[in-house]
Amino acid sequence: MRQQADVRQFGTEWLESRFLGDVAFTAMRAAFASAATARPNELCESVFRFADRFVKLRVVGRELNAHVTRPFAHLRVSSRAAPHALRMDLWDERTLPHGSQRSPAGRAGGWHEVTLKSGDERFIAQRLPHTYSCLDREASHLVGGIAWHEDIFIYERAKPFARLLLAWHNDLGFQIVHAGLVARHGDGLLLAGKSGSGKSTSSLLCALGGLDFLAEDYVALENGDDGSFVGHSLYSSVFLKTHHLDRFHELSAHAVRGMPPHEEKSVILLSDALPGRLGRSARIRALVFPEVLDTVEAKVEPLSKGAALLALAPSSLLQIPNRDLGALGFQRLARLVESVPCFRIGVGSDWRSITRQLDELIDTVARPDLDRSECV
Image (tube, rainbow, N blue to C red; front, side, top):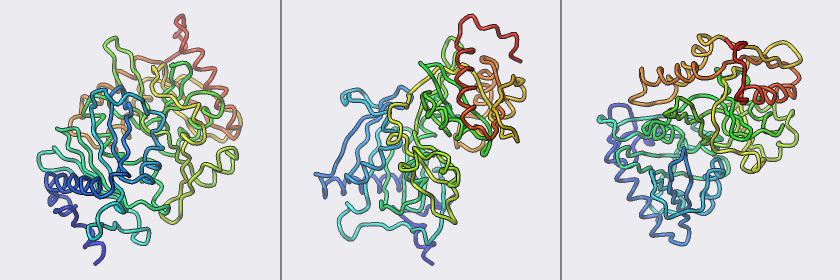
């Protein structure tokens, strides 16, 4: 009965075909205004730059603000006068006047994730155990409420408002791809592949080895007029299987450990652990597809364009909601594959050799006089 009672919030049912996006958004915007009025001294404002677009963030709740901004703290900018492409208004449920607070189900209710769209697709919303959020795509305005506490699920902590921010990027033409991104001096390697292929581990190892970390999961892809591609960072958080933390002793103090049975992974917030190794954007010089092998040393070898597209496209097109990607999104990925050399890296038991191999690869692909005859 509790689960059913929680389905109706902000004047509508958060169920497929019953969700009223305009009603939910209006009610949530009013809730933010109520929280800001009740706690004016806890209203925090900041500006970030997502994919070369300024985003204005307002948060009611100092504790929530400190936590919710950590995954993209590396994107913070000082200018508050710049025109913003997106407004984000968030509040901590504890800041609402007494009697109007909502309490999303805790861990006892288990993990649930629901993404909904209004009939006209103007509004997209997400319901998580402790988070309700809604994006007005026409007004570029995101509102959300979080029942914050230290026991919150790590996905809500590490990738706040992910589905809505991914949709917003896609709507602006910055196609989100499911990949990692590391770079040196602005020259980047896009690490792609299905979950479990080793891209998160490879991205993190590269950051520890001196390369810039931009992503391990979501990259905003920009196609330039000259045919080149730039990857933009969004989150600086890294998910790893909890038992792999033992191999990263220098980062374990910054890990937020997942709690079974719902969370098999833990998260490392690199804005705390490696703030000097975080990048914002990089030109993509090559595609690299990690593959876990029963070997010791990592080994890089050329990969055919067809195999690269087949490995890149499915997760990037199917797991991220967007109303307009379709054939256009596939064509953009095909152009990316055609524009840069593609490689496979066999990931063995010597994890440190991954960094050495990828560092050397950047040297090779970033040279303007590169002989590409060895690249398939």
